[in-house]
Length: 171
Image (cartoon, rainbow, N blue to C red):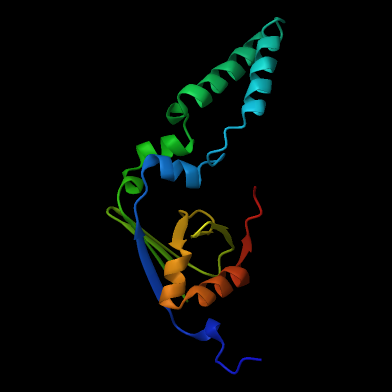
């Protein structure tokens, strides 16, 4: 047993500033996160083409092929995609300061500021050297784990993540 004080009760605050270009933003925040699922797209294209053969499924087939074409050739035009989100929100095109403390999380950029307490259910995930913490209805907060460790707050942050959130179990 370690005789040190419980780190969860210590006051701490850490901030880092990151700026992502569109490719990095899409890779980190996109639904498919860089994976293009070529077999799934080929199957959808085949199903859309087959749907064109019958009059009852002609319209759904045209809609399916149109959406698939937009996904493949012009994803930034699809409302709600990560590409569209990055392009239409100037907040993500500039440096963003992410702050984590024993009280909660803050998101700061020119023209936008948000703050949330830890008590809200949070999803967290480790991707390489980045830790993503995402409370509901709040922007993704990204922290470089090596910098958290250098600042000596890594354990406190992870304790709060485990206490108030769930680890994302995606692929």
